[in-house]
Amino acid sequence: MPNPYLDWIVYQKLCQGEIKLPSTMAKRLTCQYLTGEHPFLRYAAIKMEYLYRDPDIVMYYDVLTGGVKPANFRISKYGALSDKASPTVAQVSRRVSAFTNFDMSSAEPLQVVNYGIGGHYTPHYDYYRPNEESITDEDGDRIATVLFYMSDVAQGGATVFLDIGVSVFPVKGAALVWMNLHRSGEGDLATRHAACPVLLGSKWAGNKWLHESGQEFLRPCGLEYQSADMHLKLPRNVPTTIS
Ligand SMILES: O=C(O)CCC(=O)C(=O)O
Ligand SMILES: [Fe+2]
Image (cartoon, rainbow, N blue to C red; front, side, top):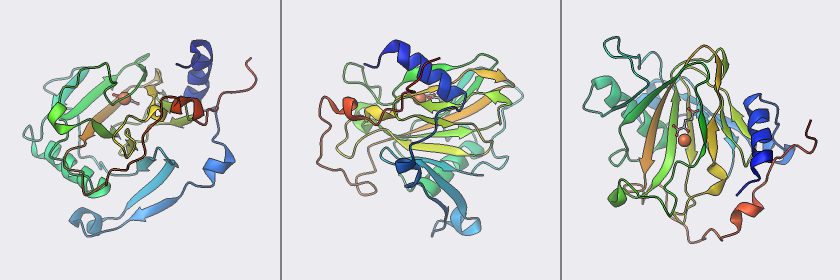
């Protein structure tokens, strides 16, 4: 486990956007317009930007153009919406499949969350740790996370990856996508992440967790297994001076 004191310092620095990626990683990051056969992509190419490689963390811009609005009849801090709930929710799923190319039949319902001032989420993994009970065994683990930013946040509210030193500040209408599992199916320890406190404004986010089942041909599994000490080899981006 990471040193809790250093972890706290790194968290704070990432939340303030003060940790830069090493140039070896920055050089590997590309931007492109996603085009393809899917009707949604033919209608409008999506801008995608790699924010990290292996684990791949990708931002897709303008994927929600006014599509999801919080309902005015029920405002709560948290809600899960199935595709059957409304055509808009089903449309979000279709859009995710258009830009990720993943199969949506094993995905969880869209989880919509609102963080007020001070709202945050402490560091965690989205996949099930070996000692945790899986809620959907038959569909496998959460292979990827799709995090929609449904609002801009005036200040704070970044999504940060503590062990690889990545900060992502919310951009309304964008979706952040990352792979949680190695190709072998084991959880990737480098995906440990947190939501930073909202300092000003409010943050609306939507989570869509994609599961392994149905992706066999879309993302073939690999044979390399994660060794027990793999986390020790992560490219840690711990600041060298602590003030
Ligand atoms: O809202 C965020 O930035 C991250 C949320 C998150 O990690 C989660 O809901 O699992
Ligand atoms: Fe998460």
